[in-house]
Length: 96
Image (tube, rainbow, N blue to C red):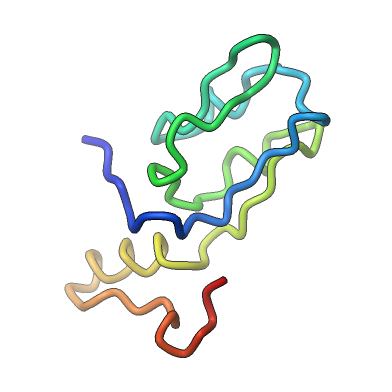
């Protein structure tokens, strides 16, 4: 099962000018966020990103950035694991 998180909160970005289309991001992403087309990685659905950081850590070209383990996606995961409501700090204006 693939989960979508909160809409428009993922910190994942891609710099197409740096991407060589090697496909490692698509291989390591547990939620199938990437597809390779025209020798470039493309984000299929940003809301699928759980901000684990695997893609950015494995991108030799440095084309991907993500603030791994932060933001609303991480808050949802931690809330589910702990049985509590998610708290990412958005009410304090920390998300941007």
